[in-house]
Each structure stands twice: as C-alpha cells, then as structure tokens.
Image (cartoon, rainbow, N blue to C red; front, side, top):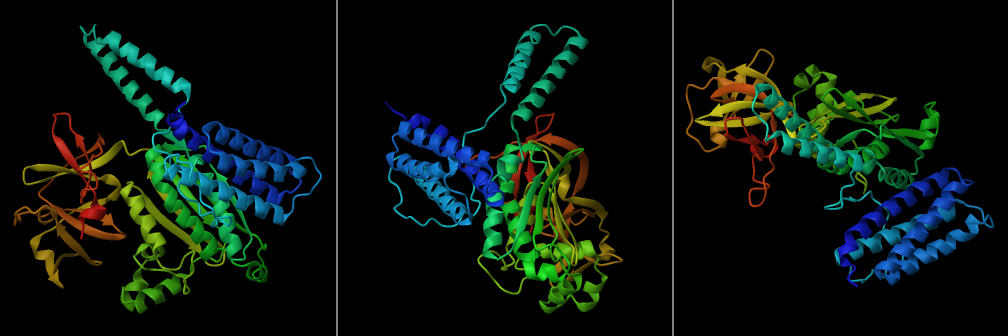
Length: 496
C-alpha cells in the first residue's frame, strides 16, 4: 500500500505532538509532581510510536518506544521527576524532531541521522506547506452562501435584487477571509521552549507568559512573524533580563518576566514583547550614535525618545558590547523592522531604565485587503501602502537644495531627502513636479516625489507568481473598478 500520500498529514501531526511534548516538559520542570503532564507526555510518545509504525518508519518508532519506556516508571509513580530527567526528555524530543526533519527532507526515504546528541532547540520554523485546519462550520457557511449566489444570479431583475446579490458577494468574500485566519497560538506555542533554552544558556531565570494566544490573524502574515518574534524574545532574554544576582541587588525578584501579548484593535492587531529587565538607557544610545558618526552631538540631543529608540533598528546598531551566539551583532532589530514594514506594519519601542522594555508591533489583520494611496507618474498609476505614508508635502523649487549630491527639501526643523519616483522607474524627469509623499522606510523618512496624488482607497492585493515573484520594488498588484491594473510599490526594496 502506497502511504506517501499521507506523509504531509503524518509530519504535520507529528510536529504538533512534539510541540505539545515541549509544553508538558516545561510544565514538569516547574511542577515535578504534575501527573497530568506525565500522562500527556506518555500519550504523545505512544501516538508517535503508533503513527511511525503505520507509516513504516521503524527507526522513528524505536526512538518513540524508548521514550515511552523511559516515561513509564515516572507515570507509575516509581520514580520522581527531577531536573536531570526533564533535561534527558528534552534531548529525546529534540532527537525525534531532528529525525522527523530528516524524513521530511528525504521525502520519506527512511534514512535517519545517527547522532545521539541533537543541537539545542532554537524555535525553528514549523510551517507546513498546504496544510491549513479549518473549522467545519466555516466551510458549511461558505457553501451555503455560494449556493445562494448561484440561485440569485438567475433572478436579477430589480435594483433591490442587484443590491442583495452584491451583499451576498461581500458575504462570500468575508467568509473566505475568515478561512485564512489562525490564532497567534499557532506560532506562539514554539516560543516557551526557546525562551527556556536561551535563559539557561545565559544563566538566567525567566518566567515566560503568552497572553492573547486566541487572537486571530491572516495565516500568511502570522507565519512571516515567526522569526521576528523569535528575535525579539531572544533580545528580551539576552539583552533585557539581568542575571539573578544583579536583579537581587536591584531589589527585583531573581526571576525575570518576559511576556508575549496580543490584542485586537479596530483595524488590526497589536503584538507586544515585554520584559521587566534593565531597560534601555537613552544616554547610552546617544553616545553610541555620536561615536559611530551617525548624527552630530547637537542633532542627537534634539531627538525625542521615540525617535532615539527608532535608531535601534538601523543596520548594525546594537546596545550590547559583546557578541554571543544569541545576539549582539546588531542584525536582529533591523531584520524585524524590515519584515514588519513589508507586512505594512509599524514597530515602536518604549523603555524605562531599570524597569524594562516593550516592543510593540502594530499590524493589519490581513494583507489580502490593503489601504493604499494612489499616485500618478507619467500616465501610470501606482499604489503606496498607507502604513508607510506619514504625510503629503509641497516641494517648491526655492526650498530644494543639493547636499552631498542628493536633493533635499529644506524644512524649518531639518532637511528631508527627496527621491523621484520617475527616476526609480527609469522615466524622464518632470521639472514641474512639486508634490511628494512623505514615507518611512528602514527607519528613515524620505520624500517620494510624484506627478499627482490621486486618492486613498482600500484594495484587494493580488500576489505575483513566478517569474514576477520577488521583483524588486513591487509588492503585488491590484485591479481597480475600471479594470486598470495598478502595481503596489514595495518601498523596502524600491528606495535606495
């Protein structure tokens, strides 16, 4: 019997069992007498053994059986769970995870790694292509709405019936959107283990909590956030949380707190990474900015705290003097900022020295529908995501200067760099253009000069497929009501 067609389901279910085993082991580490966690671990190991045997992966089945046998005396109360037992069980789960990854890489060939000392768990991606669990009632509702549409299309004689038909179309679109929504928990479940391992590596004690795990977002958007959230959590533990002795001297509990919190707002979601660690010293940032020649002493003193913290997202900027395997190269925050902006979101940092830091990501619920500003260059229309638009500005020629070979708009408080969209698109320059869209890209404000500013509109995003996928400067396209195809600009890759 050919079982390869069940491989995706097998790998998907196996990853979920491994994720649950991590969760139960972290519970046991804190509460060694938790018999429910021990029973749940045993059931997971037993399920993995049975699934592996059914699929013909005998080596995986033997590993799961050994884990099951190791757990049995703890399950029967003959032995007591201690830190060493939890550590061995975590290593066994890592070995299983490594073996399942090998199965996936070799498409079920059954060749497994021989190593018995797997690398530490680093919160790796668990995205499964083509797998999306959907509540049956959502599918039922969508089928019902589709049936109503098919019936209604044959009876469009009055204006009232046309309005009803349009309402049905909107309902189908809304229901289809709901099919893409998944809870934060789908990526958050992998983080407790990662936080625990990073804390142990740094000799720190950390209590990690996830709040708002039920908040739903678009699946594609949430999967894109997995790595940025991992960066932020690692930074919170490695940069923010102090070692127990330092916390005790400061009058804090020896155990630090790190939390991942999500909440809905009117038109999107706010995800926060919060720690009660040492915080960020604004004066230290000022000194580092001046020392690296990024800003003058006079200019840096005029920056507000939000503007100062925004400098943390510049490439190569790090507040940590020493470089470890965990962090300190000034790459993480810049990568997070780039990803968040590509998702049409914003990143803000708030910090109080000695009390802690909060990094907030403000994000849309989905990228399928997107508010944009339509602009015109030559005879073509382009869309700029509103999330990156700060304002529109006039650019009278008498206030434009050339500084270091680049055009800038002289304002009362500073000089705004100008970039002509015509130039970026290899079109002839228009000398009469005096309008610019003030946009933010990679933590810096830029005036994007255009011919005309048309209107604000919410559009449906159409993603590019090969060979256009990944084309520099373009994040997708949309189709307007008159049938016009409008490219959506990706400012992260378009602007120099």
